[in-house]
Amino acid sequence: MNLLSNSIKFTEEGEVIMKILLKSSNDESVKDKKFIKLLIILSDTGIGLNSEFINNWKNDLKLVKINGGEIGVESQLGKGSKFWFTWNVEIVQASYSQKNSKSYINSSKILFDKLTNYSLKRILLVHPFKNIRDAITLCFKDCFDIDSFDTYNEGIKTAKYYKELYNQAPYCMAFINIDENNADEIIKTTLKLREIHNNNLLIIFIVFSNSNGRTLLKKLSKKIGGKIAVIFKPITPKKLLGLYIHNNIEETIINEESLNIFKE
Image 1 (cartoon, rainbow, N blue to C red):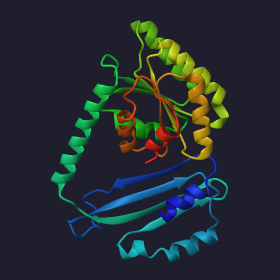
Image 2 (tube, rainbow, N blue to C red; image 1 turned 180 degrees about the vertical axis):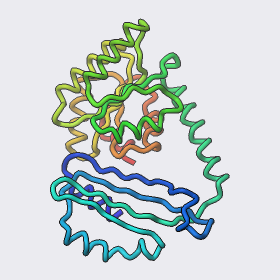
Image 3 (spheres, rainbow, N blue to C red; image 1 turned 120 degrees about the horizontal axis):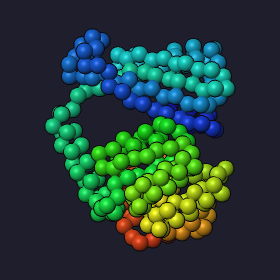
Image 4 (cartoon, rainbow, N blue to C red; image 1 turned 90 degrees about the horizontal axis):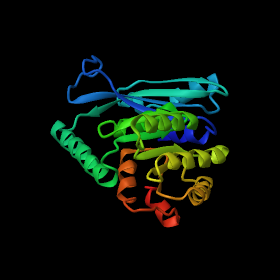
């Protein structure tokens, strides 16, 4: 949490990425088979660290060594940092995790079937960062076909192509990243997508939950109208499921109450 909070604090532009990977079960460094070794990698595009700070920082982090893990950092001033460490975790009963995983997938499919058009099983996703596109794709891959792009023009071009090819609206939902620098482009894009889908498209805005993000959200939703939902960064499966539970209505009006629903 300390590493993550520092990355967020000192990264004004770009992205902060945290990955948690399971190391090989054949890893000889894990002597007790009741434990597994995780590799946690945190990278950012922040201000970076100088070499003197890195040496002092590594000496202070003794908790990782007590756990039997290793830790490292790579950094360049002005370009960002990459931290990593390994952590030994006791294995829980496999039957519990498998049962809950299966239940989650089944529940998500039921929700998606109830709250989306049965004939449309394709999602449009537009976000400039590949890691966020990958995270959303992973959540939906068992239920939908997903077309993900880093520009709005690509999304519109593909929507038009499918409409001409199949003579019907291609998407049931469109996830659109929004920020203050591209507000006009977002309005043009979403209105064009609504036109292609005969206004039968759930627009889901991806935005930060700070005051600027909420103000922008209200502004855009008022100008665009129709079925609009919001999901606040960071993206999690829980938030994605909550999104559909609270948007099973003909038209979603973005206000303070509905914004708070998606904050958790």
